[in-house]
Length: 90
Image 1 (spheres, rainbow, N blue to C red):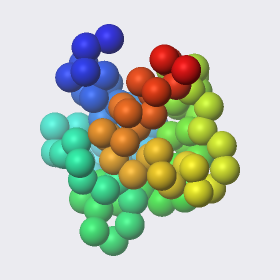
Image 2: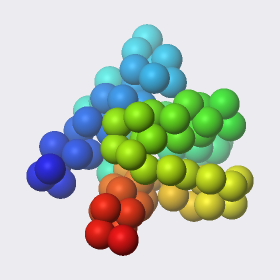
Image 3: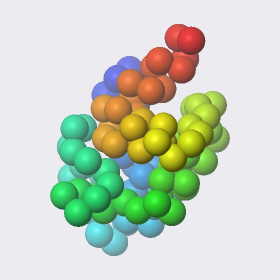
């Protein structure tokens, strides 16, 4: 999958699966911006992290386990893309 298409798909999945449709458009998510925390425009929380982990497994066959690992790989769109690409080449 092309990199830009993957990023677009991830952003759309985040908006849909984390119930952000009323708050945000997928085009408003920058590739490097944090997805979690007070400095985040997206404003995901720990429940969203679990949902996002499930979405990654269902849509990309990527398994994200453990709290430290989850935080590291789900920090931004670019971090998720890097993780997906690393897992597919592993």
